[in-house]
Amino acid sequence: MNANLLSLCERIIRRSDHDHPADDVLRLELKNQRGLAREEAAEISRSVFSYYRWRGWLEPHQPLPNQLKRAAELTAEFAKRPESFSDSELIARAVPQWIREEIQVAPAFARALQSEPRLWLRARSGHGKFVSQRLRHCRPFGEGVLSDILEYQGRDDLFRTPQFQAGDFELQDLSSQAVGLVCAPAPTETWWDVCAGEGGKMLHLSDLMQNKGLIWATDRADWRLRRLKRRAARAKVFNYRTAIWEGGARLPTKGRFDGVLVDAPCSGTGTWQRNPHARWTLTQADLKELSALQNQLLARATMGVKPAGKLIYSVCSLAWSETEAVVERFNSSGLPFTPVALLNPLKPQTPPTMKLILQPQDFGGNGMFIAAWTRAETLGATKP
Image (cartoon, rainbow, N blue to C red; front, side):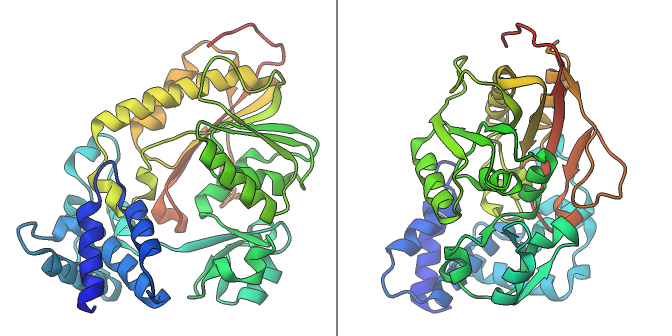
């Protein structure tokens, strides 16, 4: 790496902290660089993320360039000889010590965190083969509906491809696609995507609904919904409406829904393979605050579920406070909802389970937790 690129890597790392995630800082810095080749930008990204991925092995008193060099060496060594890293070493160094109170850090989990993340695409329903033929370097995840889940192994800029511009595929993690498959919305239904963000899961719901029915997409941030609208226009998705909703008692619409998805804001511990900086900035106070928000959103969202309707809760986290604890509290709330056993859509031959936990080592996607309920067939007057 030349001196200019190394200097840019240092600047990104020094500017990254709890309130300024490294991926955001990286994106902004690369955007502001003029004349930076795509290969150079990719090299900077790899270097920054390698630094955070291997931070537990680095000597903090060493100059930052030395640490970046050592991180690159560790990345190459792990890729070539992963067995040279012992299970105990990986468990001790891959994540901060305190997280063991929240997550069982098994050897396979630690090894997955130290591996390079895989890039997953979601082709429009029935278009998996077409997208694979056009893009090349694609591997279908499975057969049937799973053939539209593609692992991309090439090096092209996918955002510039005609297929992306035409809305034939989206970049969406494998485990996030599993959430949409668990929801399984029908074309005749109405759904509410409570924390729609920039619309990744909403677009998937629309695709599964054949662009029919109706989806309400809400979020607390208007700028996210503006991006959602741009993505929806490119994907030719029209069966949705948007509204600002901050989690208050007043819902965005008086109507009730066949299905409500609460893909709640979370710590993102399930994304620590893809976003290693977050391993070192998350605090116990963050988890406490997020857990309170998740409980509130889930309880408030129940008011939008029709009798016999579905309620889906998902987070890209594996932390106990955001997963099991939220479900336990909801189940003991007295609300008229019955837990539903779920089939793993990525491995449908396995027995149903009351809570679906996708680990990074299982399929090569993010960690994800999913739980579901159905509302009683008679509508009560509960006010969470």
